[in-house]
Image (cartoon, rainbow, N blue to C red):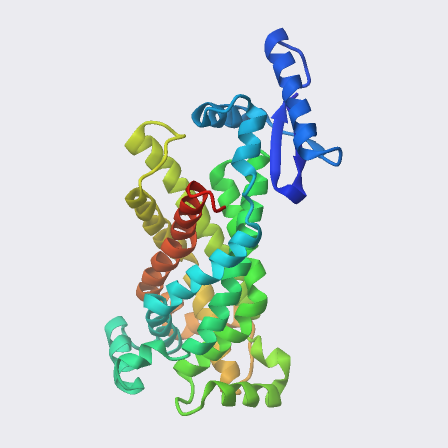
Length: 361
């Protein structure tokens, strides 16, 4: 069988074949195993790696012009998995996303999710009219920036580490993307709960109440748990959000490589990466009912109304507005999904590629 030697602390992986099934190749791969030991040290952990992983590393070695698969693996994964680089990239990219069009789409979507009798353009006009012009679309930006700075780093660090570990274990890019996205999304919930609650309150609640006043009122009323209404909906939304965005985008990227280049190992152009992110972000909006439930539960909490669970919210909205009520705000959500995917999946990947080419990562 194929055996992979890995030292997770250094984020490095190398593969070798200990069986001398074909004399020359077997002996060469045994030599590569020695390279593993020499590079990674005696503390390396060995695990079974499927044939697909070995073949992928062989192809990578050829493209890189490396002497051996072991060298290619070490070079390829030396800075992968996230580490401090992802903790730095994540907050910057996420704040750029939110500070540009991300916040207006968020405000528009939140109003539609709460005031479900309003149409798409009616809701947009009401945000503008009731909030005092264009500045209304950036209502709650302070809380959003705190959320973006924290959740961006958490997402990038956890998502990229999970993704790198799964790819090194032979999992397909699509499945690795789905799993990594789900794991990264769940990790975000801790910091997202209070921040999204404050943004929802700023958009749907009393406009005269400042963020600090809302924090004081909420804490006095219910303590820390008062900042987490809709926590279940957030967990479901985030897990399915980034599993879908990452997974769908990776699936589209794989198809684009074959469609445009005729080679599954080809490198996409920047515009092809953007197109893949756009398709992935759009498809990921299938989970919009979780978002509507989150908005309703947080708005209730902000206004001191009786809390109800996610399933009760689904039943109440369906009874009042039909199934279509669970998809109110879908248009701005699609726009937001595309925008976030372009930044946090496609954009993050392009930034890391540029840093790696420059030798900075």
